[in-house]
Image (tube, rainbow, N blue to C red; front, side, top):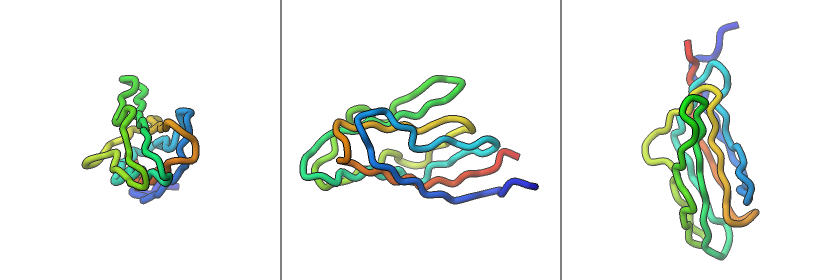
Length: 111
């Protein structure tokens, strides 16, 4: 069976203080992050960290301890971000149940 050439997906997660994988590009696909919105749903400001891991080159912080005001949101990606097969996006926050992330991703087959 042939792989679907392009598949649009939406992922959501509530952030915690533990570094949590919110997306892993599946085998035979490259993920193209179109949107990475993080909302602070609490009444207090705080910070988040977003990391992209790459099996070949390690990891890179997109945001590190980035401050988000109370009841505000930010875009973690300006433009598009390519996530190769097997690579991950991980997030963490300064407090549990304070932030939510929404990822909009185009998965494109590596054929």
